[in-house]
Length: 500
Ligand SMILES: Cc1ncc(COP(=O)(O)O)c(C=O)c1O
Image 1 (cartoon, rainbow, N blue to C red):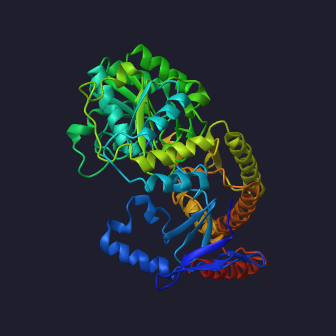
Image 2: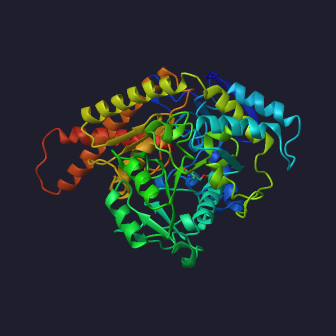
């Protein structure tokens, strides 16, 4: 699927082509990453857009690094405005399970666009996508399309409150459900923490009805229910958390969530914006066999275009206007091009061997990473569910926000820099999940393992060296430390070349 010829912009902003693209490796050595054009574009964008970005994490602040301006994607590869080529493991933060510019999806988008881009009226493609979604998720009898995951979760919570006539919402520390006011609650510590605003501009009057609890802890959940009995409208959860890095639910946790919410007549919302059509065709609820009351979707169902959705039993969904009193609307909701891209994507995924292939390749990668970490004596926790994964730099299992937060961010930033120098584009934060797509060939995975191995070796050496450097104040050095020092200087010289 990968086409080996790059299109990139030159320093005057002109598009050009380069046969084979700019090689990241020559004679086995990583080559310098050119950045002039990306830096120029960043400066320009910063004059016009806050931070130069349309979504904060794109600014690469957590890894203090120049963010590439992407001009093209094909299969598993992307190219930036300076012509640098990367293997992409971000996949637009999840939607691109088929890779970039997948021919069926591109063809569907083009043929929809020639018939008009938006009508603000119903189209046949909307119901086609609804049919596919409902078929994949048996807990959905009806589904409403919106334009983002944020809109989906915000609407699902409004609906849960309308249905139960209760005020409180339980969410879990480290879970992200978009940027609606009531869900931007800063993760607090302790049992049944009452939310405080996690963003300037969010009123305490709004966030006071959000209860943030530690993930994977059934006991605190019971305590919250006994404290707020008959007041909790819904529990919203990422059934596999992707937003504190990849953190799966442990053992019976999801089953307990279901049992407790059913007993308390509280709506259970599975936020499957990330996991829907990702960890299985029918999402995490298919994988774990749990039936939530409402489900939110996004990312993959838009095939790379803006689509979100929420759905559930008719009994609840029929409260949505125009049938019921819960109001929710959108000028571009169910946009014909976006739902057509989603329909094409699900069409490729349905009844395909893609999920088996992804599982096989992801498992191979997991084994390779763990072996490399062991070989180089680097402490890591590698979490994975299907093609969603995160490599945490920590020596303890990562099961919740607290343990994810104990990861070594400095090591992660170094890992990220070195991987970027190797031509590998990862999420620029320890607290995000990376993704494999159907476009990642076995060759990509083997290459990735090789590069992770090389980078972990380097990290082990650098961090051990710096730890030893700190001890060096004591004047006992062996003869070979001079050799190590000279190597470090050389390494730093090469690192300098790669990044600048
Ligand atoms: C689980 C989950 N829910 C909701 C959202 C919000 O979706 P969007 O960014 O489309 O508003 C995200 C975004 O990453 C997400 O991962």
